[in-house]
Image (tube, rainbow, N blue to C red; front, top):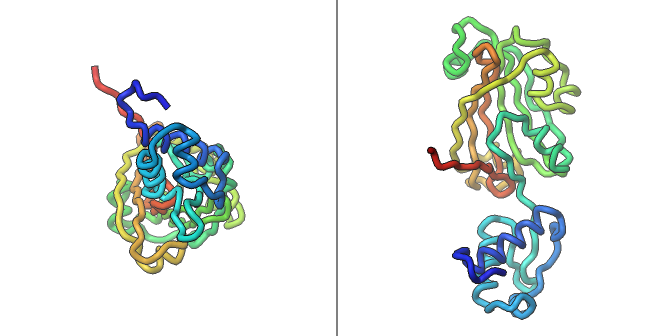
Length: 240
């Protein structure tokens, strides 16, 4: 711990413990030593250690159990705000992604999809719905809409084994840029059941329209993520 910096000591402790959870050094299920022992070990006060652990509890990384103490729940998946596939991102951090395909069908575009993809009302689109899992846990429900003439529609086994952007690249389609909106809301009953959450649990929402190198809208997605298991990372820069 560095007491000479303006960063609060509890935050330094929490950050180091979060890094250990992310790396797997503190795996899910492990019990943390009690606050008194931990405070003595690192040479800080018990209130400082208690505040650090509470920070992890607030992030959903640790739970307090009566008679058990503080226990690591899981390491939250963090994803950079870049134009990438969730499947590829999970692979890159060894989260062993798997997919359950809920729907894959060609249908007339709805008004919202027509606007998002800038297509005529008569255009047919490929409607794809999936639940993505990380290490066996559901983490996101994804809905995607693409112009039906964009590529040959893969069968469900292919959809379950690959990320959508990987399939697009294989078909010669190169997503280059996207407009993206992130929000949050409560889970409806059906969504909660799909994502193994309680009804009303907080969910992160993401709406995205991706464009190819020629400026054509090639994909519109509306996704839901478990806030307890997922977060977005972004970097901010001071202009000038």
